[in-house]
Length: 106
Image (cartoon, rainbow, N blue to C red):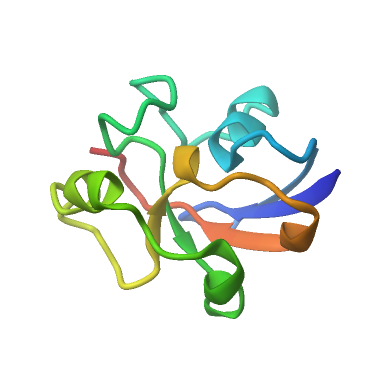
């Protein structure tokens, strides 16, 4: 189990607990976190689960795959720490992960 903090665009913080092995996207969907659309259901074929990973967590979250990069490149709000939450698998090492949600999902 890991705790994840989602910070919505308006500053509202939502803390959820999720099982290891699931994706950050599924943790958001299962806990009804507004701001994650997940239109493709986690197939890495859209960018509607975009999150901005807190700087302190980037080394643990890792870098995007080539496919994820291509989806992120379509997003006008992409930042250096942008990731698709469907591509971040929750591990014990990610307990306490902090991600910010953009104002809009594209």
